[in-house]
Image (cartoon, rainbow, N blue to C red; front, side, top):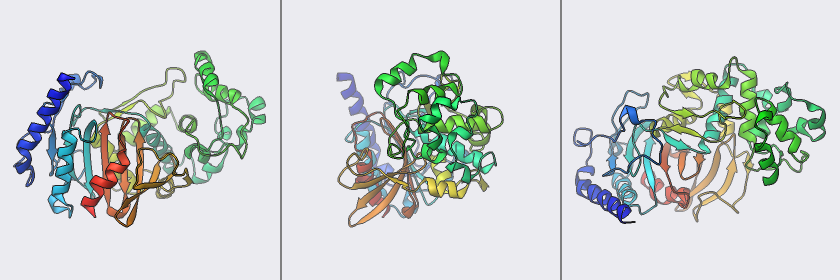
Length: 404
């Protein structure tokens, strides 16, 4: 507890002492450099990463020649002082444990900050944000013609040709389409005990045997069961991707998506049982590379002029195709409502005053968020290590007012 308090005090002193300079910050005036880890230490685990001695806050981010356009917060029409004040609060842990906050406005990165264990070149662990990356990889396969938009309404069994369908068909597996997988409405259901049994069968999970085993354990799939439920959707998507692209899904994702966007400093783990890339978690991305994923979606699938993903796939996928309701809005609060889901993207209304703005987000446990507010031409990215924060409520209260 003593060490934590000391670190907290150091962060507070550092930010307060530099506040007057930050109020008119520019690259020339911001003499301290964004925090980095040595190249030899990039693969260290998050737990082993030391806390920063002081927070880094930049209202005129450096052009790192990484494909991200940069600008100045003060020139973007935003309320600069509001953003800086919020950054001071983050540095003082007033909103929990954040590791980074980056903001792109009108197509340019205008704010970049790192706290606690955040580093500009250290890939931060990602949980369910990975689901969105998996969905976008499927979109890339559609753009290249390995699938079509019409294929989204075909059964996954038509692509996974190594399945033994004798028993599975009776369970309704032929009713599960790619669109169901993308929207988490597959209807495939297993309980905790069944999942534990599945995990004890590593020799039966290699390749499509993984889906075969899950279908064998699942309760029958019916129209009534095909409602929204966080589950096997991304896994099904990854298996279809593996089945339709040349080579492996792993190589396809690297060559056709990550390399295209200049993302090289990352980790995307392989599932030890199936041999496929993890579909729903266990990636690591830098905060700046998370900005790239957000910009790809904001630009309707284009990256630096090249259409990587069909515009319709992005437009449909970032819509609330399924309304999940307001009973359990993830990371919500009094100004967050009408939660919905698209193609592995979340959507909510964020209220500021009397007006509501649609916030579309890729999000993962403990506070990894890529949030798009198209109406404000705004992209918000943050990493964190605290699952108790109402992150979306914080965005509605603390960030959006500065850009309205």
